[in-house]
Image (cartoon, rainbow over all chains, first blue to last red; front, side):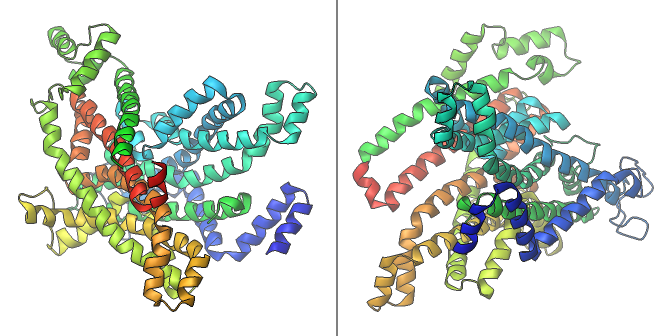
Length: 293
Length: 312
């Protein structure tokens, strides 16, 4: 193991990571399965209109609460809507928000963290104090509080989740920036008169990118779970638009009618979150071995 | 210890103030007119004026802020439009249900999670370890409201073993009502605590004092629980804090699944009915609970790590 670690330091970092990634994937069948599962869900989300057997919003009062059959694989809900079609369209919301929210949080959080870590002083103290406060709140609670003020809808969910994740990115970015800032090459850049913004963009940001990317993949799973939670609470994706969370919400109000919407949608959330967790752990082990357990 | 407690309480004052300020700001950046949002588009101008008067919305912002803080200090959070009751009495009724759920869930979660972690660590890379790893993977992935719904379907609807909704009256009835929601939250907690216990134990197992304990002939159970686990408690305390907060926020959705009359149910109901004063009150309660839990964890650190007592 030590030999391998020494070896990787000798070659250029970028290609070596890809090599390691390929090796790790081959070593971990569970991660391969996770990647495959994510691939399947991405395909389902992309080709939802082609795959869904029915219109996810079409109601029919003559066939409500049907049990699963050849016609409706997961049955129908209390409005006679096809549950499978709703789940297929619901995957779009989950996946898009799962990627968008951490991305937005990474951009805002990294900016705040780099500014605080690089400039220090009053700016740092204000940002750090806010981050310390917000980080002591669980993300779900923070999201509920912000959603209570903003209301539901697609972009509001993205903003709510991003805002709930920002403190985590800011904290990591700040710590990393302070570490990189003390490196000799930054000192050299300052001494040779490179402008501050050029130092930040060319020397700081590329060197703190790895932990930020790791954080993004780890938060993807959380974003999907939180979107489902918010939609379940009625604060996320609004009816009649389908999302896995609000399918469970509707299903729970109709448990005596049919338990299948709850069972199906929950299984989808669980498997996607599980897959992203596995993938995130693997990416962390490759990109940021120091923080892995 | 007493001195530390007092100092820590004083430290919490600016945090609480900042939290309240954020709540105030959040409630005021509501898009549009809060009166219109609360009463709907069909509200008469007199009703809107009365609403603004009642919530002091026509006063200058600084005055609203001072009134808001004074209200919180005197336990006056306004009246609920929906229930036509003081918000404080609604919260006082709901809070015990949320607190007892959090406590029971934490208790069950720790009681299951710690032994699981010990089992995994002492059987590293063998079947029990893989089993615990699988359990924590699933525990991390399954949403609490989904697990709750499944338990509800199986044990309440199909088997009829547990109540479908409500919080119960009297101690035993309340414990009966709390079982399924608590097990739901405890499942996720056990997954988290189990994984954490395993990691911290494995770290400690390599230490000299564990080898010394073994060398002097201490029984394996004593080595694990007295020498190793005792020293692994510090990271576990941090984990317990994180998981307590997770349980608190998870309780919102779980309360909704089991229709428990807790703060979460109250808050979510208020949001969908735009019951302005109750939303604000619910958020304040949750925010204060978070500050309180963080304070509790700090005290737990001192109880767990004698070195901190000297510094404190």
